[in-house]
Length: 74
Image 1: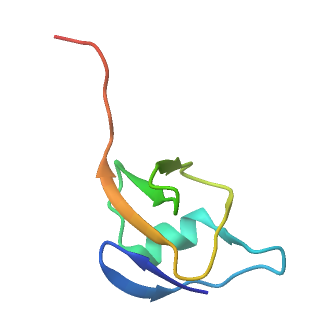
Image 2: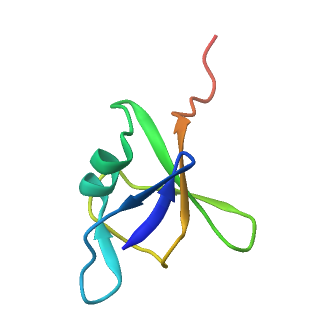
């Protein structure tokens, strides 16, 4: 399936149910270990993709690599 990751078009193998393997998506998109992958929804929101499993996607959807959010601390 064709989609966009970090501003470039990529092709990720898709299953018959419209999902892709998250690890394969991260590898093809070039997402660094320790960084998160966010799926940019057509409604304008972002959804952080889990680090493994499968994710439902639409053709030409956009994904961006984002830093891992840390809360609290000092």
